[in-house]
Image (cartoon, rainbow, N blue to C red; front, top):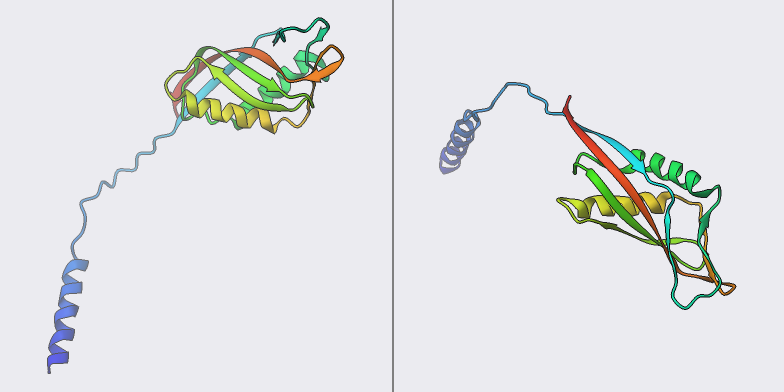
Amino acid sequence: MKAITLFIGLFMANFSFAQDLEDRDDSFITENNKNLLKIDIKEPFMQVAIKNCNDFKPASFEGGAAAYKEILKKYMYTYLNSDFYTLNGEFTFTLTIDATGKVIDVTGDPKVLNSEIFFDDMQYVVRRIKKNWSPAVCNGQPVKSEMKLKMNFSSLSADM
């Protein structure tokens, strides 16, 4: 008898909670924000000179700065997640190129709202480019160097 009473009590408790409906908003509103991003990469790229170097040759990319600019722009449009940040203005990126010609670091300036996410995305974009640079040469030896790229961004946020 106790078992039947317990069973009926549990059944009634579950049934009463099952009938408690939440107040919910049945209006179907979708918010779909899209940022339209325009990228202008300035040429020429600026090679940071190395101190105490008499015979300096800057780092170069196969096909020149124009080829790197096109590849970089293509990858930026593909891999940048511009829904997390709105970009307006000029940014400077410093690529650190090691003695083998591989880009080992990318830093950006100026720091703005959500720029850390943007700069992390830019590191990802630059590392996706598989072609290496020809390293800078100082006194006949390949050396680590820095290349500065100036980019102008303009974003237009639109609700779709």
